[in-house]
Length: 170
Image 1: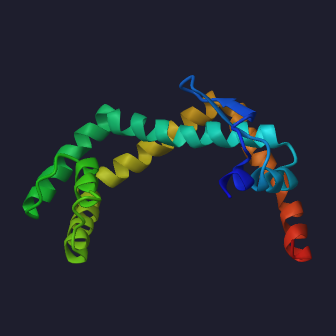
Image 2: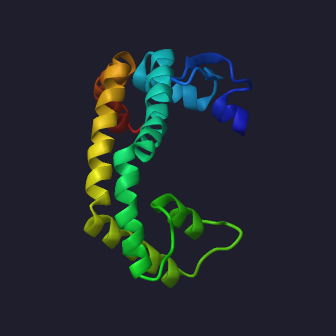
């Protein structure tokens, strides 16, 4: 079943990610056939999606390592301590609540999420994070303009094909 969906071997499509890693995927199988019908140029679609998807992870790293973000985490942590929650940062709070080996009761998750959101707003962390996210998103788009533009173009060109597929009931 997996090979019918994805093809027998990860060959046919490849892309080099911003960090230098080469990724590949089969150009065979149901998924490739569907994407080929929708986007026409399967190789361009694969490259544009893989590169732009990797930019999101890069952006998170750039934001969380930025000195302005790290400085904004300090008042957030003080606010959280005032709520009886001692986490050095949002990532550690999220990690504590999402350990699969030790799932939290729903009420405890809600308490943490509510405190985290309130502290992010009142401390200014959410404003700083949003500003940095926008700044780094724009920088990465400028650094990888071809992939960003290709993805937008491929999506735009796919819309009429998608409408036709839905109208036919394929």
